[in-house]
Length: 431
Image (tube, rainbow, N blue to C red; front, top):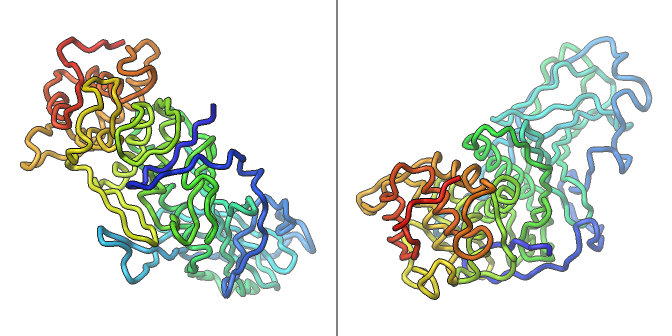
């Protein structure tokens, strides 16, 4: 059965989706790009005839007698937010690791391909001289050593592009040519925010992962301004589908983007057995609670913050995971196979990560090591004991963490604080 992993959206109930794969969605090719020099509907592999490979068209760039250095910086419009909602002013942030094509007009010959660096800087060195105007096309895709990622227009199934045009590379005396690219506009800038947030999340993951050498498969994020997602907001089969509706626009909801990325990470690098379905934080199936609780924790983990927020036009929803509200304590039957809240799961994981504070004297564990070892190594042991219900749940996570600790007491204090009824009386069953 295909499990649709839907967003744990602070009380928002998620639907189960239409059941169609992304390629089967009904096309809607109408766009309104306004003053933007793009339509957000460009596929870099040339299937649409937009560009030709290097050397195609009239004249071969390799035959050009001299070259010029083209450098610059790419930034995108971001919309910062805090506990009270979005700030009034937007900001321009560097766009790291994005793909750029330098294209000769009007025959669409690619003169060069490069990526921005961590600070959004880029360089085509050398770029061939040409009497034609050239365009710089910034694509919503990233290719890194351990992962690749693209943000795709849902209706068209193609990556977004931002086109900066009108540059002339006619004389070597012009070298270096500086191009400052500022991506703006509600129809396209959120796509590059999604790209930056998801790429940053995966870079964080790579930095704390045990050195397993495991590469992640291609991840595709579907988003379109003004268009709702068929499944609400969800993850399935290496696709993240984000809301673009006017009522729930997720293009700048970094917390939500990283939650869905957490499902992708858990599926490929850890373990999950979620049945999918609706969830709103109230006690639910332990398998669903564990999957959703981890995904929210992953969002907090990447951002180094216990808060979790979601913007809706009807209001701003905010939660913090330092303390667990009384209604989410324990399980429905006082046993580890009872219904449990995903919020409890997130709170336990956060307490394993965050630094000690006088406000939480019971919390003596911190850092990435125990969490990474538990999630990405200990839980994957094929001969581990399956506690709680059949499948991966919080009880299994706790048991796996015990196997990495010299003593139970620090973990026990965290678990008892949320009244989760785990039995620490027996030694851990470690492979």
